Every structure is written in structure tokens, then in C-alpha cells.
Length: 259
Ligand code: ADP
Image (cartoon, rainbow, N blue to C red; front, side, top):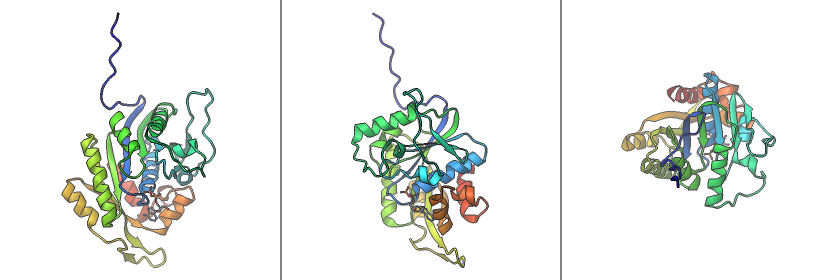
């Protein structure tokens, strides 16, 4: 009898997707989704074919941030049609569950959902797929890095010590799994008053830069804490779309240019 075809080992590429970039954070609420959506929109504005996979099972926020609603259709019952806005093709795990339902999925279900989103969504040909991971180093992040050939990971942290400690764990995980780390992004770096422009280091200063230095990874950006960044995401038109020339948008566009 003929030997069964050998399953290829190690992380796989996804057909039609040129690069997969993971956006990770140690903690929730540090701005990982904000960075993901603004990067996706900035890359799309540069003319790249961009997908955004919202894999944050605990707090999927991309439908709101990207301003899309409704359920993705599955005309053939096998594949899923993603949604699209601001030049970005998006699928969210939040669209596979009821918005008010708490997600109590266990590891194997999470991994199944991730594989479904990677393999059954009709992404089309993409230059870049940005994956907005759940915070921390759980099953989704591990599975993604183990099963799929990631081009690299971006790690988002605030300047606070607690967030930094968790970000370090995330970077260690990617290192162990052989995923290149593009660099750290400091979010909520300084607060810029939308009224008078006064700057204040609400969460401290310099911590992420020092961490990047000690880990030997680049500090890719320092993104200010600014009211417009939140209101624009809440309104479904991220800052790089709604105010592309504002200094707040520049930080995201600079990162996109370096990717
Ligand atoms: P995470 O994905 O890490 O959980 P989010 O991106 O959802 O975090 O951000 C949490 C909240 O903070 C959101 O309401 C978001 O709009 C807001 N936010 C994130 N970054 C900034 C920023 N730089 N300035 C103002 N608000 C921000």
C-alpha cells in the first residue's frame, strides 16, 4: 500500500495570504485593538490588500471599531464571507457569537474557531493579515504562533509596570515559538489635552523604551492618549481614517510604513 502523504510539519502559510502579523499584549485594555484597526486602515490607505482577523475572544471589538455590523453570510454553507469597510476585509470571532453572550469556550473550541477563521473565511488575496489576539499568552496566541507561519508580532503595552511585566511574558512566548518580534509599541504614552494641548505622562514615562532596550527589540512607536483616538474608534472610523493628518494618526501611519 502506498504510504499516506506526510503531513508537513511546523507552522504553515495560508494560501493567498502573503504575511500574517500578530498584534499582542500582556493585558487587556492597553490598546491592542486600537493599534490593530488603525494599522490595518493605514496599510489599506497605502494601497495594500489588508485583512483584519479579530481573534480577541474575550472582548471582540473590531466590528464596532471598523464600523461594520450584521452577520457574515455563508452562501455555500462551508465558507464565510468576511465584512469590509475602510478598505479592510474583516472577520471577528465576535460575529460568530451573540454579542451579549459571555464566551466560556475552552481551549479546543478556541483553536477550532481560530482555524475556521483562518481557513474558511474568504479572505481573497491579501498582502497582510493583521490578527488582533486576545490579551496574554493563552491558547489562541499559542495556536496561532505554532500552526501558522507568522511574519512577526507587535506587542502593545502602556508605560505602567504591571502592563510591562505582562508584555514581557508575551514576548518570551513568541521568542520560544520562533515568531520574530517586530517591536514594542507604547500606547497611552502621554496624555494630550484635547482642549489646550497640554501634555502629561499619566501612566509614567520611559518604561517601554527601557524594556525594549533590555529585550533588544525596537520601540516602534509612542502613541499618545488622546480623546480623538477613542471617540473615532467608538464611532467606527478609526483616527487614521477620520483625521489622517492629525498628529495622533501619524504615530499609527509611521508604524504601517515600517511594516
Ligand atoms: P485592548 O484591545 O488592549 O483591550 P482597546 O484597543 O480596546 O484595548 O482599548 C481600550 C479602550 O481604550 C478603548 O475604548 C479605546 O478606544 C481606548 N484607547 C486605546 N488607546 C487609546 C489612546 N491612545 N487614546 C485614547 N483612547 C485609547
